[in-house]
Image (cartoon, helix red, strand yellow):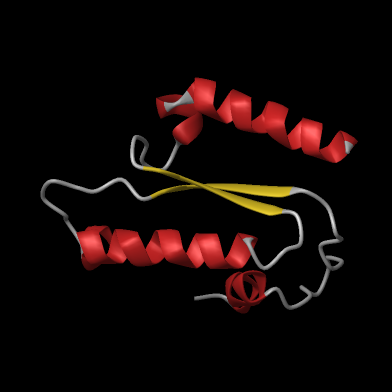
Length: 97
């Protein structure tokens, strides 16, 4: 795993990126379960842990919001476009406050 990936999840500053300021942040993450998981990552327990990881990370920001979906896989914008649009509208409203 690259150091940049690990740095991102640890919220440490990346070499070429500034700290994330106190702004509204929304993360949409899939926790959809697989009927026959092809890998350990896709087991029910792993999906639960994946959602918890996203939830904890984004909620470490003062204005963070986690949206965990069980209806989409890797591309919620394709599987649930209406939900993604509503979350973008909500994010824009939070920016206005």
